[in-house]
Amino acid sequence: MNQFGVIVRSFSNSAAVNSAIKNVTIIGGGLMGSGIAQVTAQAGQNVTLVDVNSDILAKSQKSINNSLGRIAKKIYKDNPQEGEKFAREASERIKTATDPVAAVKDTDLVIEAIVENLDVKHALFQKLDNAAPAHTIFASNTSSLSINDISSVVKRKDRFGGLHFFNPVPVMRLLEVVRGGETTDSTFDTMMQWGKSIGKTCVACKDTPGFIVNRLLVPYMAEALRLLERGDASARDIDIAMKLGAGYPMGPIELLDYVGLDTTKFILDGWNKNYPDQPLFKPIPILNKLVAEGKLGVKTGEGFYKYDKK
Ligand SMILES: CC(=O)CC(=O)SCCNC(=O)CCNC(=O)[C@H](O)C(C)(C)COP(=O)(O)OP(=O)(O)OC[C@H]1O[C@@H](n2cnc3c(N)ncnc32)[C@H](O)[C@@H]1OP(=O)(O)O
Ligand SMILES: NC(=O)C1=CN([C@@H]2O[C@H](COP(=O)(O)OP(=O)(O)OC[C@H]3O[C@@H](n4cnc5c(N)ncnc54)[C@H](O)[C@@H]3O)[C@@H](O)[C@H]2O)C=CC1
Image 1 (tube, rainbow, N blue to C red):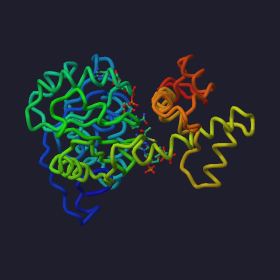
Image 2: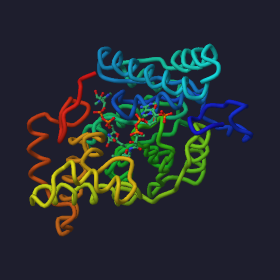
Image 3: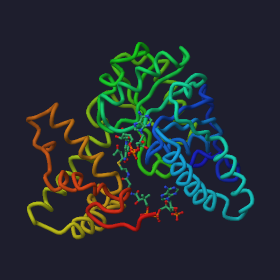
Image 4: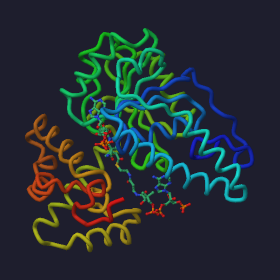
């Protein structure tokens, strides 16, 4: 299996990792849900991707097909026909739906990737808990909320955990597997095994704010904005500095635009509310202003920088 979760014999000698999970329902077809749907389908599993309307789902399918095309070109560079077949078959494994309750009736794993808002996530999981089979594991891709807080509204707390992916999902190799307070060993092991089955490198983490990556990355991006606000350096120079001086693939301000300014604001606001004494989590006026103006980064065509609308 290669790093894209695709079993290609000529690319690797390692055996495919089996998982008890065959049918996966992903709720939220935005930036992250689309990527999670794609990597799951690439690994040969059946996916149902759910969002609030069919226009959004059509956009998700378009971005999945674009990404599959890029990956197919890379791994089947000497065999374009095989590449087309791979992309078509993966795409066909993804069904779309607008009713989350019907979409979990026959599924082994539900991964929630909707807006980073506890009340909205609660309303969704409450509905799903009664509808999904008893064995089904629920997971959230939350960036910053507590898994215990999210799972507080369901009965299946033992079959609930965090599966935290990174953007862009088809390229980033890490998956943080998060154990909530009541997650059983069996649920945790199944989630780990599933992560491996889709080609990700899994790390384990407790239910601590930001898990591993965001606890380090979000304060770093916030400090970059404070540097910018103080007028100590321009956005472009901060980005160049961290790329050429620290070897990061993107500078912190480019990365903020890439992640979505609304998502980062949600994260900081939530942590500031829970940890008011932590200076690293304080609100950042320049970030709040852009979000209020609807400039959310790459996805809206403008954030700290401007982008061509796709
Ligand atoms: C907020 C949270 O909760 C957690 C998070 O996600 S935090 C954010 C984590 N993500 C990061 O830190 C991303 C940092 N950036 C990067 O790693 C890189 O800039 C990047 C992979 C995004 C793009 O890489 P790049 O070299 O700048 O651009 P680009 O040449 O377009 O892409 C590199 C490769 O990835 C591929 N690629 C990029 N995006 C892709 C996508 N969505 N689908 C498929 N392939 C993709 C490209 O085809 C390209 O392949 P080749 O090298 O074979 O040509
Ligand atoms: N943006 C990022 O880099 C990362 C985000 N995350 C987390 O993933 C989750 C999703 O983030 P993004 O994909 O960036 O957001 P997004 O805004 O791109 O997509 C969210 C999608 O969920 C849909 N949605 C909202 N409520 C819904 C509901 N009740 N039922 C069905 N669909 C619903 C929206 O229509 C939208 O398409 C958030 O919890 C975020 O914190 C995790 C890792 C990285």
